[in-house]
Image (cartoon, one colour):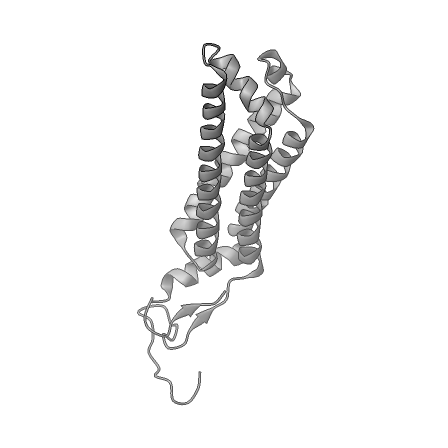
Length: 189
């Protein structure tokens, strides 16, 4: 702290409130990039699925055999548009949560943990369904790229959750909670 700075102390924290900067430890920074990578990977999986227009058309025709060609095309177009919008929103949400978590946001850390644990559990169940042949039994086509991307996403999410709860990360989140959100107090990136 320089000579001209005030010497305020955060209530009960022992931290000086003027120009206090908390830098996130490496595991928190790693977790942020892993969450962003997992979201990008999920978006890539969605884009791959939406890019296969013929498969989407076949799926719509099987579900609604009474629809004409133009109605099927309109349904496919709507499905692609909605899929792209949802994918973009999910990506934006993950990036926002990951950045907020990296800046000490407890709620963002909790939400990402719930998303991560849920993603790992559901992804593992999906992988188990593929491995046991259950997907073939219900005529669900699963490409090798889908399996590879899913396993990569599961790994990214699992490592990101663990990184957020390592002892050094937990200490960072405790310290971030104690630092007052006053003028001159920042959490460094």
